[in-house]
Amino acid sequence: MNLVLFGGPGSGKGTQSARLIDNYGLFHISTGDVLRDHIARGTELGKIADEIISKGQLLPDDLMIQILDEELEHNAKGVTGVIFDGFPRTIPQAHALEKLLEKHGEKLDAVIGLEVPEEELEARLLNRAKESGRADDTIDVIKKRLDVYHNQTEPLRKHYIGTGLYEPINGKGVVDEITDEIASRLEKRTGVKRRTRR
Ligand code: B4P
Image 1 (cartoon, rainbow, N blue to C red):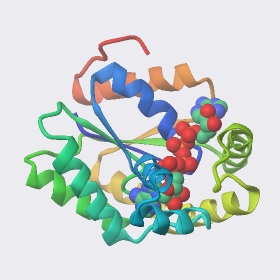
Image 2: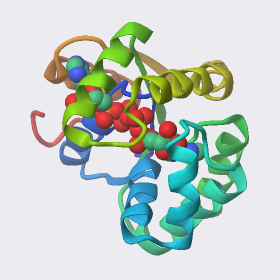
Image 3: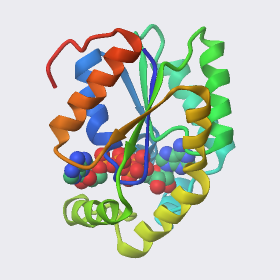
């Protein structure tokens, strides 16, 4: 089973991914985590990513597509399925993902859309900032990330509704209940049951 977790900044993609990995034994690719790892290690890519992320912008599509291709090639060989967390974020990235999966004889089974009102997203990210120390969790950068989301990422929602893959989920509420809702929709859609309860 190959899934995309889709939603605004702070919608809970990382939070729900952690649960889906256990529930279905899937391999997790978070492009945000990959970039933060490069920043922490001070690689050339990390230096580029640091500058862009701290401004709340997206990295260029060609660079992100290359990163994803390498992740699939080197780390995801032979896995039963993948959760794509934070990728795609633009229409060109979505087309690239289709091609990459095709190359590996795979396809996307569902796009889980975590739908959360903007005020809630802002509040969560400001709250996360207290502990995470993330350079992109400040009020100005959060506002920029929300703008970028509306302009560059939200059009993907319509794209995936058109393909029939989009599963809208109310992402506001208790984390466990959101996980249950995702599991129930996935079972209806694919017939696959989760191995553990949460
Ligand atoms: P990401 O790492 O993907 O980060 P995110 O959108 O901020 O967070 P996420 O939705 O995972 O939220 P979380 O579960 O942590 O991206 C960071 C940056 O990397 C991007 O801005 C961009 O610059 C760059 N980047 C990444 N991928 C890219 C791509 N494909 N192309 C170009 N650039 C890319 O949840 C947030 C907070 O809410 C947490 O504190 C959590 O505890 C809390 N929370 C979660 N669920 C909750 C709930 N139900 N109720 C209350 N709080 C909840």
